[in-house]
Amino acid sequence: MFDEVSPRYDLINDVLTVGNDRLWRIATTRAVAPREGMRILDLAAGTGTSAAALTAYGARVVAADFSEGMLAEGRKRHAQNELIEFVWADATELPFEDDSFDAATISYGLRNVNDPKRAIAEMRRVVKPGGRVVIAEFSRPPSPIVRAPYEFYGRHLLPRIAGAINRDAAEAYRYLNESIQAWPAQEELAAWLREAGLERVAYRNLTFGIVALHRGFVPAEAPKPAAKKPAAAKKPAAAAKPAVKKPAAAKPAAKKPAAKAPAPKNSSSGGEK
Image (tube, rainbow, N blue to C red; front, side, top):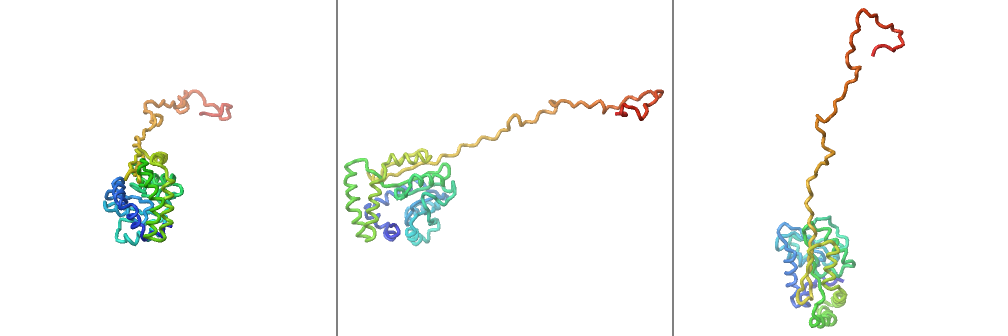
């Protein structure tokens, strides 16, 4: 489905969100706080638009996605950007080592993963202690005044507009709307982040709650105390060692008077010691 819409994916998003997706991207980038020298995982990166925004600050970005069509489009668009590496990846089984990224982010892709809780746990696994996980996702507007027209737009107008831009996109965006309606509210997603072991979890609503921006930090490692040798391992002072008594046999035997004859060799005493 995503392979089919990849050539016009960003254009469709611009039109359907009336340009708000650009503002949401700015907010997400600020939440990630990229810096030069950082290595960031952009999961469900699509054509690399969000990854490119992160590299503008000098960060190196691994743009990972499950759709080969999206990756191919991204490689073509960002061929000159040496700071982006496009990698095929399953969000529930990331092909990266533990603690290999300074931060991880996913925008509007978590709800498309078959096991989103596992994807969150995987992002936590690959981010270094003290690093952050940032999730931008369509959410549930708290106000019914906004929610009712928003749901009407998503159900009836969104697929038609997408289909007018790209004939193959109508069905895809009908599915996307259904996935948005089935997605949990902000507090529940925040609870998933805490369950994954992230701390300082927080979120804020964008555009009246149409999108929610979530953030959590991987716990920093506690400083390891200096190793102390157990008391039993200390060697006792030399003075504490008991003196070894020499056996009496080691002392030279007193000489017998010459006047006394030595015992005969065949004596039953067994000889001198």
